[in-house]
Length: 582
Image 1 (spheres, rainbow, N blue to C red):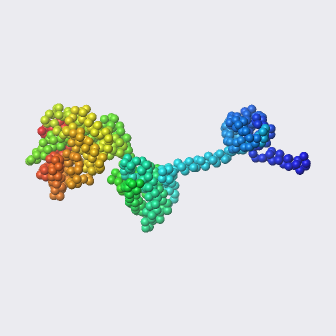
Image 2 (cartoon, one colour):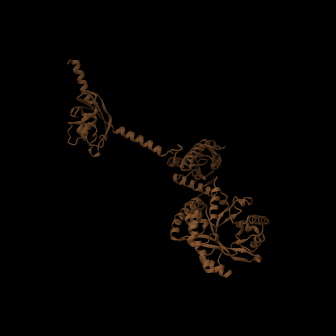
Image 3 (spheres, one colour):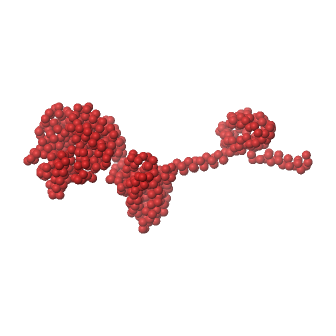
């Protein structure tokens, strides 16, 4: 070997010796022929006995597939593997700074020799994990359907908005919580796929309309963001609003534009929305609290009929907390038997102010709360409807009322009420098995179907074909139907013939004014005449004075109900009342 060749070989050896990567020359059976100091440093923690005689034996616990890869590699030379990751157990690391992950590359040089390259891949793996975590975190804050921020993303952005320093005046932050009024109907009638398409179109419409909607004169909104925070719920975050009134203007415009029809294939879908607004300027607030408060205001807007917005007030939160407590208590109330029936007599109106007290009774539910005392239906029926308990409550009321009615018949004979009225809720009318349940209750109590009158509100009776079909199925059982609170809903005298009811109950608001308002007298008279022409009975609700009773009787009303005759009383008291007045 010449001097130049010697020098070049010496340089190569020095390079291999000092190289920052581990270089290992080995035979095809794994026996190590040569390795540099870096190789010894990286491999030593992996060797159980500290010997670095055979690479395959050293790596067997970490890469058992390695020996098979080499045996199956048939060419005379070439790359066997590259970048194979080898994790080093924590207890085998000599120092916290020691590599946690190694990367192995193996090259076949000829028929008998292999060359291995080992590198410390710890930092590379850490970078990969951080990048993956970042991507996962971003994905976790993104709604996959609309590509808008989801609830987690909205809360993060809202937290940033609320924590920043604000100008002394004219620097507001606002949250708009927007919800479909009847999205379930879209899914139920057209399917979830169409529902998803509507959600996407709503998101697009919000995005395209927000900026133009949020620039009324005098505003300088600097941040506008939309998020999908629930199945059919969106949040609009605004920051840098100069006046509180600007937020209301934005909400009104967005609701108006969202309510325009959506075309999905051949379907033209019209939706309405409700929104809740929270506005703040100086104090830092918890993002979760703000979003919750906006949702509370939205629920208030929805309860008021929907297609509107409500601005959050502190009293709303207190009412919501009370409502939440009542909901929890109500679930136990059914199990504990805290709900009970009262009955208000319905009398037949006769001449000279006389009445027939046996015309019927109406069953009314009350709740004997262990702490709050007696809770009226106005306070808990809405809660029961929202949380899905109204069906169970309605069944209990009907079961108890039918049993009481049969008992009165047995005890009072001819002096017993001739008809039992029980109210039906929207949720009950939507149950497919309602008729089966009513039929079973009648059979179990021994009550005749034509002695039962099921009452629905006027607004509910006018709500569509499905309700009409349910009413016809109930009629087929032999029970009677009554239209409650007539005059306060959406029906009119001209459409009364379309409703399959036997009785029209004139709302107390008309009766209360009948003695002093000729206009209300005429309305009662017209209602009675139309109902009578259709073969329907009439009941005047809320009679409190003899004058009111005289007026409704003069207009031809068949029956009356109200405090003039009796307040709602217990089943036992009904027996006593009938015994005394009959």
